[in-house]
Image 1 (cartoon, one colour):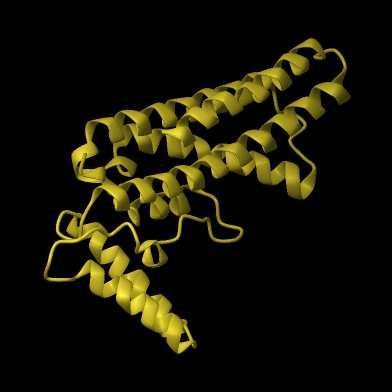
Image 2: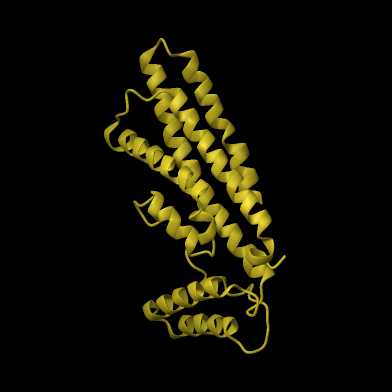
Length: 212
């Protein structure tokens, strides 16, 4: 998938920063600067990747499935999203558009659902929330619960919590003076493992996720 290819290429920027950091271990101000920049950039890349992957995953699922083949668990998520949007929408025309998508999803005759993106669950992080719980919820609402609760995946998420905590110290307190470039490298490798786990999972479950 394009989002997976893009993040793998994008992570090479972290390698550049780590290389500069390792060359400046003796100059503490430069060493700390490169490490802090790399940890903020790495965590940002992770969050952008998750949102882009879920968006791509959603479009691929809608293109491949019909209203009869889409998994019931995911169908329920679309229903909940539609109800929430309809209840908050004031425009009658927009309400009708949302209702039309809902009727497509639950129609008696089998039909394409690639036009109901407007009632798909959000692929975005809630403002200010980026930890393990939020990541898990994002994946669950898009039919990827079995992947995200897998123990290997959970190990990656627990280490991501540490990454996000360090990032928050850097952003909000300009802290983490003891941060080492080897620590950043460890977090980068963890994200690479997470990406590989995602790729393995979607390749093994194409029929369920994408009706392919």
